[in-house]
Amino acid sequence: MLFLFVDGLGLGEALEELFPLLLELSPHPLDATLGVEGLPQSGTGQTTLLTGVNAARLLGHHQGPFPSPRLRPLLQQSLYAWARAQGLRVLHANGYRPEYLQKATGGRRLLLSAFAQAALLAGLPLHPLGHPLALPPAFWEDPYAVGAGAAALARAFDLVVLEYWALDLAAHRAPETLGARFRELALFLQGFLQEGGTLLLTSDHGNAEEPWHGQHTRNPVPLVYTGPAPFWPQDLTGVFPWLQVIITSNLIKSDRNT
Image (cartoon, rainbow, N blue to C red; front, side):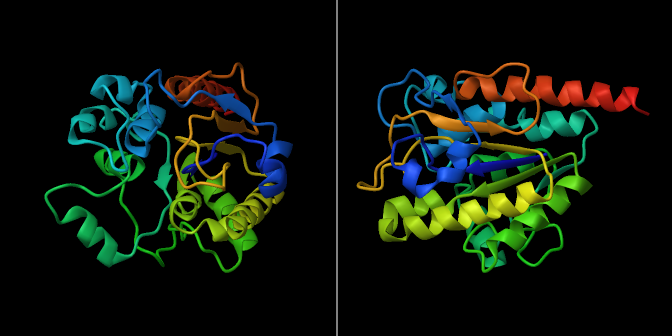
């Protein structure tokens, strides 16, 4: 399974033109507001996705872009840690520039996303760009081929996680490039799906679906899963326990077939 996390992607009418492939995949809407006033943010939204705990309610506010140190105890019990405890082969597939990692980890505060922090806390490496198990996280020369490569990794591992952060970055800083980012993402998905991989796609908050401004939104975010789903979660807190049910069911089926 590929867990493709797309930062800053909500559901909105503009996606009919910007990202029609997503709509063809029949996304299920997830409430990303977490019952807290204000605009959802990455630190609390991603932590909630990975742990099932309402991180914004815990802090009393939405927080980002990187998770507060107060959220690290939650991230120690994330999807990554749980999956590894089940004996699954797990890969955090983002490739990083070594100079970025040095800057992000060498200061007083850890400047890494909740996904990267959770991977480290689960004992997984953050691979440098160019490593055979690392994918460039965005700005691909051949997005279709990168998608096919992600499918190959998903066949080699039980759970592959890839963060695509370029959409949120473009919405904030270069909205004129959003069309290129959506096309890149669509080609990546086509390459992955053509190889027959199982896809899970979701986000932490809205942003790029409203390209006429650069702020986050309170729109629901999409949840796409191309495998059989016994039920659908209603908000970000439900994604982790929902995944636990799906992965456990797959493990039981695998045991029966061996």
